[in-house]
Amino acid sequence: MAEIDKDTVVAALKTVRVEQLGTDIVSAGWVKDPVVSGDRVTFAIEVPPELGPQLEPVRAEAQRTVEALDGVAHVTAVLTAGRAAGSAPTPPPPQQRPQAGGHGHSHGHSHGPGPGMMGHGGGTGRLDLPNIKHIVAVASGKGGVGKSTTAANIALALARLGLKVGLFDADIYGPSVPRVMGLAGRKPTARGDRIVPLRNHDVTVMSIGFMVEEDSPVVWRGPMVVGALEQLLRDVDWGELDVMIVDMPPGTGDTQLTMSQRVPLSGAVIVSTPQDIALLDARKGLFMFRKVEVPVLGIIENMSYYQCPSCGHREEVFGHGGARKTAAELDAPFLGEIPLDLKIREATDAGRPIVVAEPDGPHAKAYLDIAKSIWSSISGETPDAQPAKKKPKFWFR
Image 1: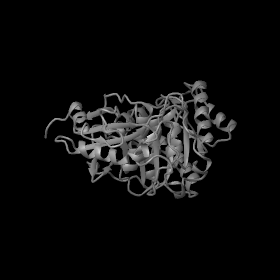
Image 2 (image 1 turned 120 degrees about the vertical axis):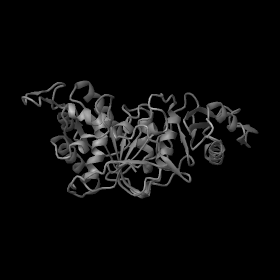
Image 3 (image 1 turned 90 degrees about the vertical axis):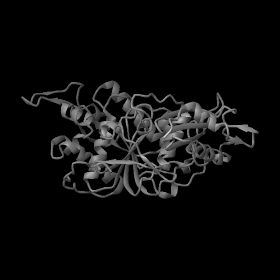
């Protein structure tokens, strides 16, 4: 198979013409930052907002054109719409916002930009994901609080409850889910025009990290990030899921707001450490979700304390109880404490998070209790944990 490069991709895209302009998409300046990773190509077509709804056929033609190149196995082509400098994003009308208690299929029909197109700051339509019963965002106001580790262990704990679970890595700039889930270096396949996600530990997994090299930075602007997230959600063959856990990027920026408005979230979980600065940022995250009427399912205090495995001495390295107190002040459920423990870090780095590595241990039990609370909140059911399954020597599929 021939080696593909960025120049070859751009040359091919010069053959894709836009009748409205009488020129091609490259000459129009619409093609932004093609990324070539082995036999996979990702690029964005950034168009004027007023033309966006008409240009899905152009996006589809561009994708087919690059797919036809020798050496290309898979293409992700995203149609995004930039807004003029100084203009503000349009807030979603009230009827398009999530309703408390679940995402509901009545919100699935898009009334905003056309398929594959995402405006800066978000469109007003909702993604149609009818095969996914519930979607839960795991978020943090700042980085470094263990959000991805927490998201992965919650997903694995939900699978232990006998549920069909997906884990979607929405952290475009710092995708860590592939390594956390023991899938680093592996690539999803394509079936027709659908991406077949990877699967490990009984959880279906998708991340932009599968599309780019692990040490390659993703240098994209906001509209391109949001468009890529939307397309990964929509074009992946998730199958039937009881619940999808979304590992959100840290903070409360454009990506987080747009995901909250466009994805039919059943609720959000906030992860924080006990430190005052982390709790301040956690409050911002909680208020953001409430502002767009996404139910906050609760707050988790991660790295809550350290207990010496030899002598049993307990040290509250970052303080203790701050998340519980914050939850009480903000009238939000407190979901539980997860300790600062070397075992959790080692298991995560090895691609076998603690719920899998030590399914009968105290840390797995803590995540299971959190998972039960989350599932009860979004479904009204009280599940029982399933026995840990014996894994064959090779369990990837």
